[in-house]
Amino acid sequence: MSVRTAGDLLRHWRLERRLSQLELAGRAQTSARHLSFIETGRSTPSRTMLVHLSEHLEIPLRERNRLLLAAGYAPAYAEPALNTPAMDAIRGAMEQILIGHEPYPALAIDQNWTMISANSGVALLLTDIDPALLEPPVNALRLSLHPDGLAGRIVNLAQWRGHLFARLARQVEVTGSSQLADLFAELRAYPGGELDPMLPEPDQSVVPLRLRHEGEELSFLSVTTVFGTPMNVTVAELAIESFFPADEQTRKRLTG
Image 1 (cartoon, helix red, strand yellow):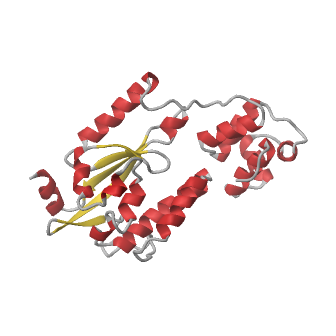
Image 2 (image 1 turned 90 degrees about the horizontal axis):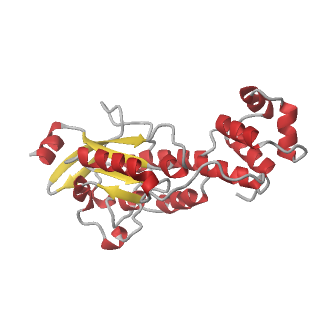
Image 3 (image 1 turned 90 degrees about the vertical axis):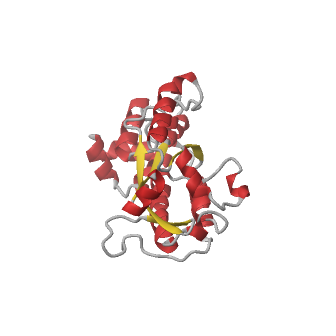
């Protein structure tokens, strides 16, 4: 993103959300004229106004801080490390969710899909993975779609790729992250085929992960969990990916 001023950043996010000045002004209960003046630099917005507009534009917390800094204000949202005392409750809740999901796989990731923690069930997914892909920092999407990763064992690889690509494309759009955009470009260069993720196989309401494992085919449904009303950047960018058995055979294989 090449823009630098608060007005430029605000305009960038308004256009990303496909809103006119009039539409955003209506939602934020301000005038389109005042909004135009902010975007062009003719008016200096207050800190409160910038936070207010950020909420209506659903700007990620990290980027809200950047907007405030560009306007000369201090960041509004802290970014504590996950291993600090301030994050004890969050870290404890995350680990409780991961352990409570065993024997099924679950992992915690940050905004860039970097693996933060995982439960013992994830070991099933890591069979025959190139050790180089397991060197920290481990990226869950790269691990899943790389030819030397999980991709060779995924029965419905084209469909699963389509599902992940749809999620990642939306994430790039929402966050404006250049790091995620670079990751998306890398993943699309991997072999595996393309398939519209909105066209599930017959009798499927969601896209499963169908995986070859020790001569069997296991099938999983994935669920993403995030913390509600996050008030700092770290929590806002934290997610837990949980895999549930999609059929009785998979359930018995993991619990038997």
